[in-house]
Length: 138
Image (tube, rainbow, N blue to C red; front, top):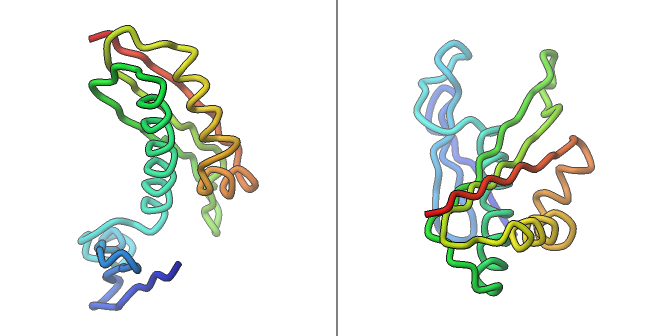
């Protein structure tokens, strides 16, 4: 797997990877950026959310759950001192649908956490990650 960032100006970069897609990266204006893209630490959280989301929705579909909406929110706390690492992460799964099984969602989250999601496996070695599940009957 390969990825790179290419400098545009100031603290503005374009990130790209083997897939051919690109994403803008920048810093907030108070930190010398132009506020024209994701912050690098935000991208880590988006990657974590995407990794576990793909696992969980795939497992729920295999379990024939009638999911009509699905979101994964990642809430992270950071250290005050540099380097401002993540100190606690909560991954919140919000599953909407008809007669969604709490047990099926819990098992899908457990499998993602312990078996399938490399982003979660890697980050969990450095920071506490907790999980929250909300099911919305539609």
